[in-house]
Image (cartoon, rainbow, N blue to C red; front, side, top):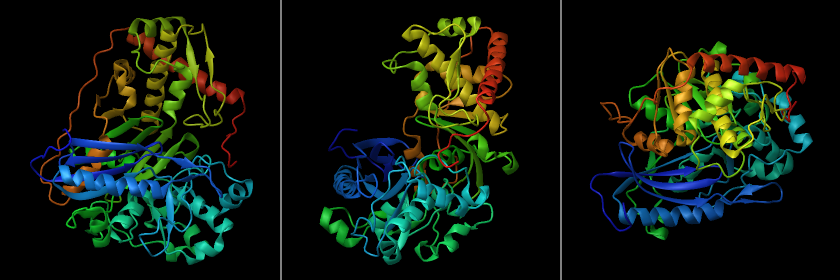
Length: 486
């Protein structure tokens, strides 16, 4: 919808803070995009650590929200964001933070890495293994406490990223289950209690009261509204974790037990039906939460970066050639994990990725191999989640039509669908606006992948061989993890 046009019907603004980009989107209450604004999420060098520019984001958000309110009948605003971010704040919501927000890709000082590990509890306390660099809200707060204990002692709240922005807008502090269950290491979602590190470090006073993601915390702060010409009737919702709200989009559509695989920098698999005793932290598996607090099995692997390593540069807009994929399968050309810094589903594989068999020499062959590799990683995620039922694919990998086709062909006895929307998180967040009043399934556009035209037996044999080679590759290198905390 063009600037200056009015739309009929209520709208909700979704503020989505990603690691690289930030978006503010006007959405219908049934999750359809109306208008979107975006800006780069700048990271500054510090000291005392690389940090996000909260002041710059604030100025952009408040100005952009005022602009969207002039052009659309916005009634509510809700935030969402990645899970690896916590913000320590004082009591005044006009202050940006008590200490700068840490960039989760910041390297850790060895003393912080080594000091934190024995405090972090068991798997259900953490919801994951201890991950790379400065991930995890608890570890970031621990780092802050070691660097500047006085400011931590004087601070009032420690907030997850969506709740930080809800607090800036409404003045109401909140904790929320999806963001705390996104590997914050602060919340045990199985026992429904704070992880031991919270009491052990004396952080209880920093933990705000819980509110569900869909709850209205209050109207926008009057002084903030007047200062930036934002309507004072605008309601502020609690908000939640980006991947969990993308899952909520499918759950709101009636697909409660669907396994959702979202692709981008990370392949993120989430499935509420995965038994908790199947979660293996050594294979990139995690424990998340849905918006109601129900446990959700998950798996994480840096598929987007793996894809880029295999495809090489300059192939982003080029579709893979099905005939070349068939040729690679026939001659036994393999890409074996993992090329990046993350083990993913193959313990000990970080940085040990390699190619085997006749090389993929041309750019087109590399792209074909990358799409095949992405499909194999995806099916490995699905298998880890113990899912043999309905799987829904979404995200950037679907830009290549063959990706969904190969995933479906690799699981011939189960149903695979896909969604081409590029704004799934925003849709899920928008649907929170009618969570308590929705009485029919929310709309969602799903398609079935085109049929695989090649030799299914050859593909199945190739996949089995790939799995054997991937596991052998890691064992030959020694089955020890290269995560920076071990």
